[in-house]
Amino acid sequence: SAVISQKPSRDICQRGTSLTIQCQVDSQVTMMFWYRQQPGQSLTLIATANQGSEATYESGFVIDKFPISRPNLTFSTLTVSNLSPEDSSIYLCSVTRTSGVDEQFFGPGTRLTVL
Amino acid sequence: SQQGEEDPQALSIQEGENATMNCSYKTSINNLQWYRQNSGRGLVHLILIRSNEREKHSGRLRVTLDTSKKSSSLLITASRAADTASYFCATDGKAAGNKLTFGGGTRVLVKP
Image (tube, rainbow over all chains, first blue to last red; front, side, top):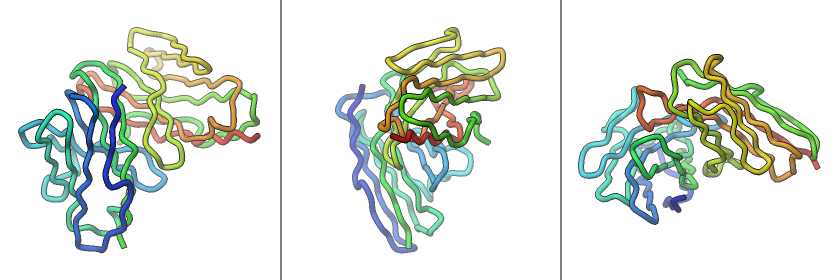
């Protein structure tokens, strides 16, 4: 398995500001993903973080709102921009070691509350 | 819309009883994975079952997969209070690469 850490673990932010979440893995991984989990809901994939190139976003998510970086094989950041109360969610990063059929491991999540 | 639908949405049982939850999906899959989430924390990977497998065991967990019915079940035997959590199925569609699509989840409460 992979050991994944996320920073911060939680934050309370004001409307209109931005929050950057970091995801660090203890070893090199092939795929990194970012998910959102709204209160009481399941997980929804935001984007696939691609090393050295622009992330691949899912329908309904755009780069201006959720810019993502992945400078190397063990680290990625997700920024949630221009925050509104509707962005209050848990944000989780996940990784797989291969690009094929593989177990996906999740970080502990970042709980964001927007006032 | 989500690929997976889980049933029931919530389940309350006594410690020692078995808990069964089901997951249905809509399109062809490469594999199906089950995860546990304790109280809004990160997800813990439980089991991955591939599309050519029918049953898999891991400790007190038993997962079945019926691709003809596009459904899977997770059985937790001899449940413990520590099994209280939300359980999610997630499918990896043939056209979606590694991207997982999650079901709505089943909230399980195991009463001591």
